[in-house]
Length: 424
Image (cartoon, rainbow, N blue to C red):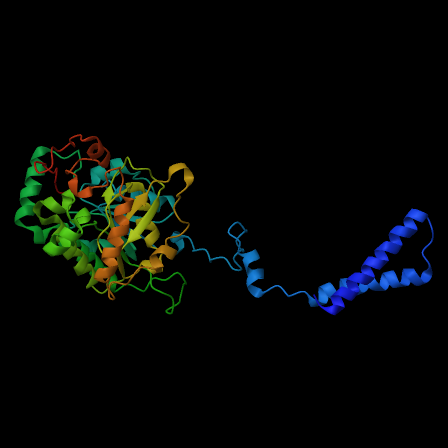
């Protein structure tokens, strides 16, 4: 303690004594003693303020960034996207009457977006949709014919973008046994003539010559929006992995669709993806995990790259993602997978926009490193449904819950499954 502090403390003590003494004796304090008291109190107060150590910058920051403090408000909110109806004149949907395609059409129409539905069966389309809707045009189209696909998207003022939901296979329950057998045999002997291998590249080629799409009108400097959004499938690259990689990443390489790969469907999808990438148009390729209508809709999608995702996602959410990608420049030129986390009790709602998550992903022309893919795999395996979380032990048609309970799936035991594969 310094001499100055001791002196001030003595003066303050003496002043306190005089104040107490005068109070008890009910005597007035003399002007001299009162002046000394005021000076002493003022001096002590001034000294303690002037000589106390200042708060460090770190200390002040720790107060404002406390774990329980209210986070600072953003100084500027993200600009909202214009309505999709202002960004497109008409969207072509291939496979419009399929289980996912019809949901895409419904979402587009709900946003007042004109739709060109490319279908094989116009009667089925008229029963699926309201044919009197002025926004909807139904056209019978042979998606296995390049000329017919190109002609379809040029008719009636044309289209400026498209969503590809068609596939060479389907498990649609309304197909006759004859149709199923004929479709399976036809695809098995002529996989290169499938609608994926022919129609998708034709669609991309036709749109490659159309004007660039952007969020900002009349701007060549804005990032391009995709002209073709392809619904592909998780797992398309896995049959071609090395034995070492299949063993190391068994949790995604050993799932039923990859293990069985009926009629090489995954290889056809993979080749179709590559042809879309090389056709010269802006594109996005979305590979969802297992499509499951019983999985909660409105759940949070988890996007990844490297073809290592395994899990579930509701078709309603897939359709919404496909439509949202049409107005998401961060998705252009990228291929990615998606599963969803069930939005239990509102804890995992979908993000307001796809832009933030997709902006973190890598462009196809850059590629995903093997280290990144394997690290992603390790993380994604923790998001599997069920308690056992052993996707490689599933039989086709068996749920994770059935695996936990040791119940046989609807298509039989593992190794004896009969996949219901037909042309869509």
